[in-house]
Image (cartoon, rainbow, N blue to C red):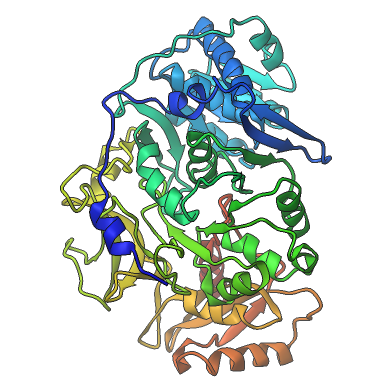
Length: 548
């Protein structure tokens, strides 16, 4: 195929208007077309409903008026504790056009993470699904800034969503905002200390768009329908799915309920999904299920983006053969999202590669002092504040909320550090080497878990795997693998030996797992990433106990 990367990258220019508001471009401008569909929604019982842009905008206007009447002002933080549903989209539009700051929170959070974020942000109001209402209500005494609680599906302190909107006018004059004004506060997962609130401007959506378009094979095209199981409370679901789809005025599918391969494939068939964002974990589950055999030939999929973990060659090749789709891997963070990836119709996607820097982003591999490293050397992935033409890149977060030291620590000169390690090849592709804190040494060798995990996944007995160091007095560490078995396989010593031989025959001798432990499920973050630190800590505690 033709490689158009260099032409696309060199010719790209940022155009960020002085005044810009996410609600205007994602809702208001499409609402004039009364029949344009914004959302197809399916609940846990399989009941489906569709919503137009006009309907979402009308409710957003009502909610903005209602919040204004409650005293919510420009710059105030408003928490959104909702799953994928129409009210979530409405809440975002309403908060943005009010000039306030949306703070999405996952429905999976327990009391402590909710309390921390509500306290730290000083949120003045929260919009809660009925399933989260009791938990949030119980936190009111410890969250003095939280003045108003709005219940969706159940009243909270007398404020119920439908009744509240029913009393409000459906016309609202949006607050004029600059592109650089704050719009969104998303807390990082807190893998290295307490969660940090990344404050993002309205312009961050513009910064995401080149990568979104490229990773979805030049979205949109006529008839495109988008879907992702990613929670809309996280950057992956919000900035990689909901908001960019609405920006282009196309429909997105929202669904409640637990992810299963069967449900995923059924949803994609039922709503004619053409474009999707699927975590590697979800793709691995689909690969190990027979459900795709029945769906084969019935899907309209033309693009899949995947992020959060390395996809690996096993899943990459399966998707090509089974689904007829070449996965475009993407890499980014909450603080600067959609910066590296593939767009296989425009430039070749190399199995196992993170991809190239998306147009508009100057990305490199740097050392501890911030110096760019040559091809083939491992260093930290970093993004420069300005693109290759010297124009400020709008993708960046503004700051960590109330944490100036952490904000400064994120940058080395003009480079924003990601904490992820990679090598860059001669053609500009980045090859993931793991999180800086996931790398370890065993018998003097530097070990990255990704390659070993991918190798294990190619064995039919393995549904998922995570590799961590096991402390060892002689070697410093041993390579240990935690393995989730595929259906129909039993964990025993014979299988351990077969898996070890499988890896030993494909990787370097020092990389094969000296120990394998079978586990029912891996610890995961709510964004679908394996929590290797949990497994590392488990091994550290075991070693400490055994040494006594």
